[in-house]
Amino acid sequence: MSTDDETGHETIAIKPGWIIRDCSSASGGVHYRRTYDHETQEGERRTVDFATHKVIDHVSIVKDLDALVMQAEYVLRKHCAKTTLGWFAPDAMLPVVRAAIARVHAEAYELNQTAARLGSLHRAYIGVAPLKVDLSTPEAAREIARTVHDTLVDILAVLRQGVIGQELSGKLLRARHLDQLATGFQAEALRVALATIAEAKSQIRVQLKQGEKPGATILTPAEIGAALDLSPVEHCVQLFRPMDEIHAGEADLIGVALGR
Image 1 (cartoon, rainbow, N blue to C red):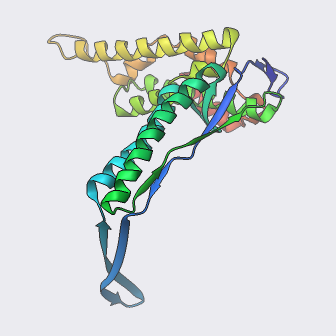
Image 2 (image 1 turned 90 degrees about the horizontal axis):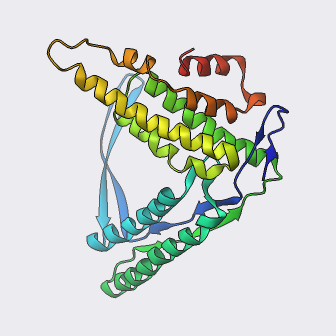
Image 3 (image 1 turned 90 degrees about the vertical axis):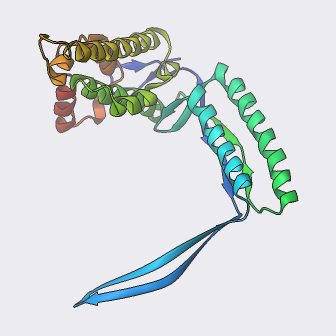
């Protein structure tokens, strides 16, 4: 299904799917108490120090139940694409997500029972709320397109700097499953862009290692990044560019990120 993004320039083919709200949480059995320590005053400046005391009624129960809440979040991260609207799952992926969440819910139910028997007040609730994406709403299509556009622009900026460390890893995590958001040639363009990004990361690593060899020509990370062929990624950025919401200053920033 295609949805015009109200720009009159592009038709963004968003895949039918669901925005999934993570409702999982854990609470109880952990108490904080703050007590006055001392204070100092210099002129009109006063500093008051307090001591915070944390009491956990059952350490292993709290740890295990909190881990299940994190596991539910991992299920969504594993199977869904993160958008500004929330986690996105195409129609075919929703049963997979529900089944995985159901397994985590069952574990939490059993552990909640154990917590009650052991006298812990800590409890975990595991649940998600899938909301069908209305593709006739231009705002929904625009926000999903913005997710793709902004994520790729951020990755381009880092690759152009020749960076492959933690900064890039965090941005690549955001890019996981982006190709689930689109259909047709736009989905294929996304897959090619993601493959190009993976190859660029490998090229940077190889170039940096070669520069460590005796007698090798030493290139700066920025020089390595500038030489990369990232045209498939740049093309994909343009496919998902929300033209009517980019101001002149933002357009200049995007030009820098694309190495122009």
